[in-house]
Length: 227
Image (cartoon, rainbow, N blue to C red; front, side):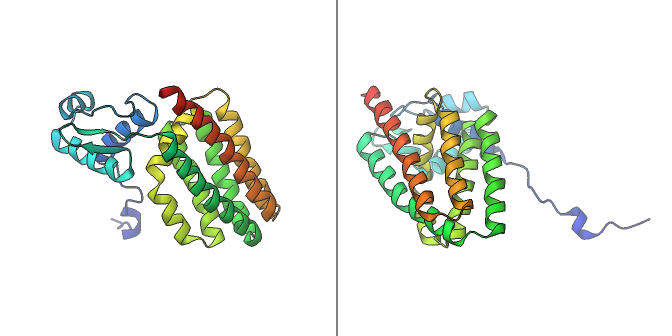
């Protein structure tokens, strides 16, 4: 009887826990607009909708609160975090400063290995634009930008972006709900990649600014329509 090496028994991708699955479902429901901004999240209803216990639901709500997707109101409990244009405008300004700077430095530093890893991330992003869920699209987009920040050596800036990710995901879900955003969004991201691949820092920064200017205007219109 042969003995399998210990390495062959290792679980490389642990299965999702019930809390992780439930969190993903509620997150997607918020990003897709099923749960509206300011809507109360009732534990009993979530238990019935998800088919899980109150303990799991409470863990989900705490996790999404940390992401900035849920907030607590006195005498009301958890609600979908409210988002208005003044908040969104600040987020887009921060993104424009940090992401354009990271893209420019990435373009200066990009070698063949960096270009290859960005091309891989862009391909995954294209697949998510074509048929992924809101969560998959956000994850793919986040990974694309993460590789840019890593190659640029902007670790501290990436920490700042990560703290905003819950709110960024809300805005991204909102802008992607408009017509043609899947097509134009991927085209904008492709231009960012192409400028980095050409080692053109000015073009890379300009491509990021054009992308964020477009989505911020869409978000402004969407949020104004909700008032």
